[in-house]
Image 1 (cartoon, one colour):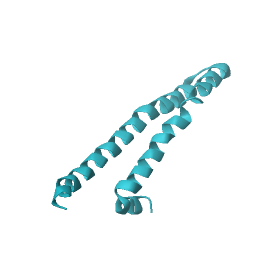
Image 2 (image 1 turned 90 degrees about the vertical axis):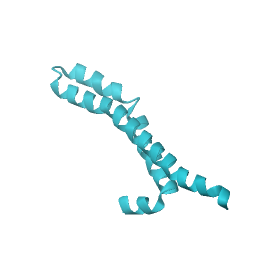
Image 3 (image 1 turned 120 degrees about the vertical axis):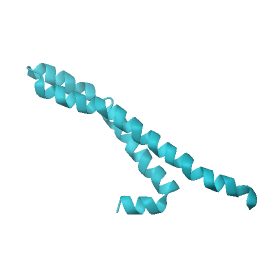
Length: 87
């Protein structure tokens, strides 16, 4: 049991880093969605706006996957925090 003591202290830090990485990737990649949304407001023609919105189709769902991974990891690594945050 004493052999697991260092691991028990190290694993929460690893999971905290992983959750931070997921959040960083979501924020970084979601900037594309937000940028295209803002650009579509300033585009003059309906054709250009349609092209901008069509370009979002490939990455929209992929960006939301980071949130799902974050929720699942939070549930697995820190169930009390998951219950408190997502209550």
